[in-house]
Length: 120
Image (tube, rainbow, N blue to C red; front, side, top):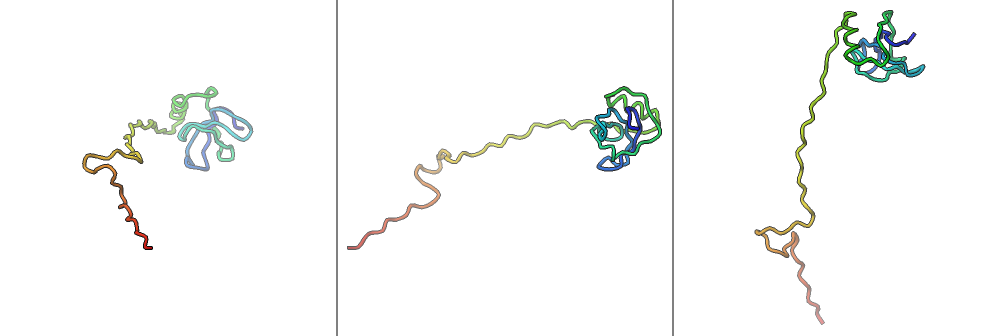
């Protein structure tokens, strides 16, 4: 029933109601799908098989699958990957920072405690 090229409808998940073709049968419970959905491994319980079977080879590329789906009359949307931008580098201050010219050496954030005189 689930063979390579079988047209299905995805029932569950983010890509629900999307048409897809089975690209590879992994085992009794899982298949690899592609089409109007993201190319990924899918449980057969989340698919509704339809009557159409397309002639595609096992592990067909995404472009081959979209050509077959468009020939069947289903519209597919091409997506492109996001280009990664360079992240800005954060410069961290070290715990023991060098004193600047404005503040003299030996001055800390807390004032020094005054010593108490002992009475005899």
